[in-house]
Image (cartoon, rainbow, N blue to C red; front, side):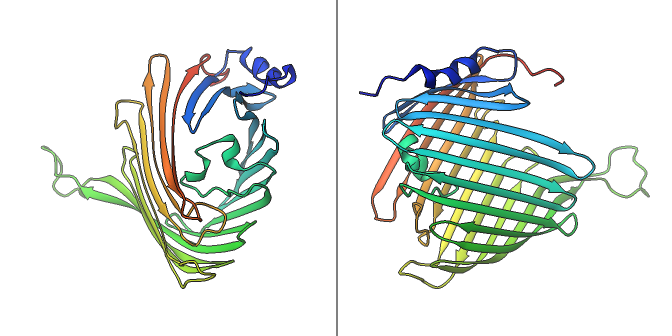
Length: 325
């Protein structure tokens, strides 16, 4: 039996639900392993957006705000906090900023409750989740655009497995020549149209029990479908293979207008604190006044134990766009 929720913990959700005049939504979900949550998201408050939720596992609260900095660029930040009824908290903060050709990302987190304590599907996300019961972590990413097609990247992580990844990305638009239309000037240059965008990636990753070369490719269609594949190859270190493979496909409108489907698979045996095998499929579909969601995930932890989870949810809009939108 879940503990009775004290009134003080109900207050953020009650207050968040009151002003229903913005682009906020009520969120409901149930999951296996057993979890049920109700909350609110994207509520305009204090100059930013607030999210809050209560479940049989704990309570969570978030606040995000963006800031335009013309002519330099823009910045945004998000604060997150969660309390587990079984004991322990999770705190996190992320910040992003752009200034000309430079983009920076910073993430900080500290916790005394495992991620799966609050979210039973957290172990099998596309991006690896630190599964330690308690710990600290920091992530810093930087991107420098040399020109329209070439970007240099650097990503560093501190925590259970400190590491540094350096790379370069090359992006180019794919085009095809259109047949001349009737009445076109035969001396005019032929018209073209974009058929997609191809991104090639390459680099190196080094850190605690990991060393390898990385390579990847992504293809995006004009309709928004994205296919991505990233690989890593390197020597075994610390008893773990240095190989890795991550693939994903994201498709909008596959199940109808406004829908979104994503499927992914990741095999990274070199991970120390995250599940080395992760697979999943997620779908969202407009249904009635809101949006229905389905989330299927599974995988295998570092000890070789397999698991899976499923979540169904529904987002109910509370109102139209905010003023000025």
